[in-house]
Length: 181
Image 1 (tube, rainbow, N blue to C red):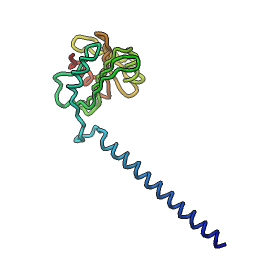
Image 2 (cartoon, rainbow, N blue to C red; image 1 turned 90 degrees about the vertical axis):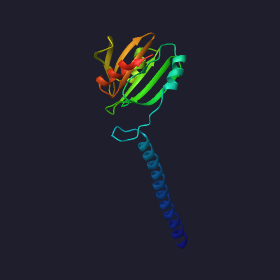
Image 3 (cartoon, helix red, strand yellow; image 1 turned 180 degrees about the vertical axis):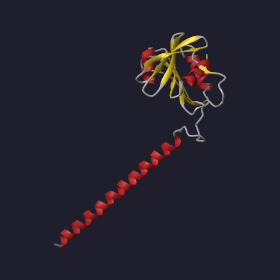
Image 4 (tube, rainbow, N blue to C red; image 1 turned 120 degrees about the vertical axis):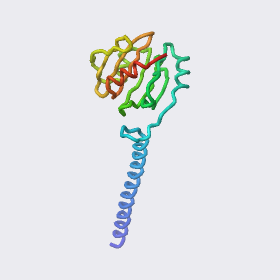
């Protein structure tokens, strides 16, 4: 009998060990989740937004891109750039991206590509449907409303420009209106 008790004792401590490991690994996961939560920008006031300087990226994208790459000029400093990228996809289409936190604390981005307009819209404004038009600097930009984002879109000079985000059409129009090569 004594032998069986010994085995039971071992399996009992092994059970506790497993629970402890589980608690520890959960704590580790929670720690990671918490760090991610803290470093992701939130829209509440006073939260640090990681602002990027996109001037160098803009200069090199302008040299590399087969179309006039656009970035905003003259926006107030309440528009804060948070992401920038220029990359060529598998099909050789050049994509320019600039992301902003808007004065209203919403998200807006400039996306340009010489790929298909529908592909770009589908990638940026999932579930998009036509939603009228904005007139920006005398040009008509098509409005699209998607599942989460809305956009104003124009195709000119061999590229489609999509200004999209959770921001209002007013803010999107402002950003689109500030775009200069």
